[in-house]
Image (cartoon, rainbow, N blue to C red; front, side, top):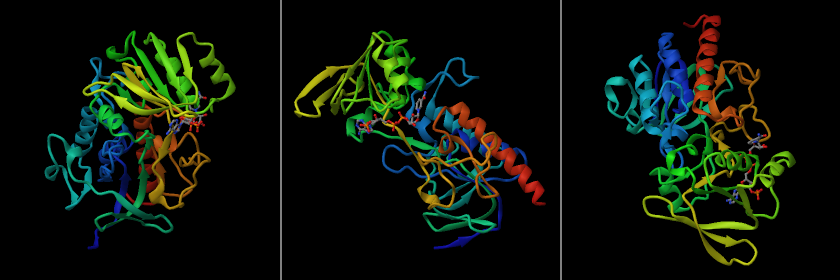
Amino acid sequence: MSETHPIEKVTIIGSGPAGWTAAIYAARANLNPLVFPGRATGKDLLPGGQLMLTTEVENYPGFPSGITGPDMMQDFAKQALRFGTRVVTDDGIQTNEQVNKDAPLYTPFQNVKSVDLSKRPFTIVGDNGVEVKSHAVIIATGAKANWLGQENELRLAQSGGGVSACAVCDGALPMFRDAELAVIGGGDSAVEEASYLTKFASKVYMIVRRDVLRASKIMADRAMNNPKIEVLWNTKVADVLGDKVITGVTLQDAKTDEQRELPLTGLFMALGHTPITEFLNGQLDLDDAGYIKLKDPYRSTSNIEGVFVAGDVADHVYRQAITAAGMGCKAAIDAERWLAEQGID
Ligand code: NAP
């Protein structure tokens, strides 16, 4: 089934803090934006983005008592819808009146299957056959944290049971105070997260699958010199233990396969991130790590005029809700100005 609609002014792909912030700004600029929020695929990719896998958000300014990640993202969506943002669902393009009022992110949305950025207006095709033509496009698909992919790991991450892929987001929660925690991974992020966690934890294990850290020398030295960090070399995690909250992990020696249990109160993944760019099919310039390259680092412009980029899909450095939201704001303002220059308003 293929359905064609009038040409959109701006279409936003993605529904994390960057996508909804872009939508709020575009809607308030009377651009009547359309959002492809995406569909849940597997357990690690959800409409709403990485915050849907976070429990308490305590570092987003304006929430002195904190807010859960999913509640925050539902509020972002409600705010964008309130100003006239429309969304692409399995039933086609829908408005505020047609989505789940209490929790708009639980509406069955469509994923973007493909885009054609070779000529304007651009074409965006949803996986259910909806075809959208749009003068401007904002890409805010984010980057998903890499997980081990084990059932218990993902279950405890989704239920706030002490398993997380972001120490900066979750590490300061009371449940991790004076506790024994572990970070899996040996890259710069793993060192950074382990060092950060030592502010709260009594001890932090770094579980590293090889006998060397991937992290830069200066970062590696930081881990080695921190008395609260113990590196477990040549070690894999065979299972994550615990029913409602994590109680420990089953470690496996990477050389001998010998297993032992390690009691833990918290487990943090630092296995890198994968930016979500597959649907672009190589049409935008990417950097060496696969993130979309901004044409100008202070703006949201890409190598294709009329295509703007916001959030973690173009940022492997900060990866915070507040920085993604800031980039979404910039993308909407850039798109608005570019549309005005084209005489489309
Ligand atoms: P990364 O460099 O890709 O490191 C990922 C780590 O996870 C590696 O040690 C890898 O092990 C390990 N790993 C991956 N899959 C695993 C699995 N299934 N089981 C066990 N371990 C697994 O990712 P990153 O640390 O997030 O860094 C991403 C980029 O950001 C890098 O360019 C980094 O330099 C940069 N960064 C810089 C800073 C800084 O300078 N302050 C801070 C953070 C990040 P192997 O080594 O065995 O492959």
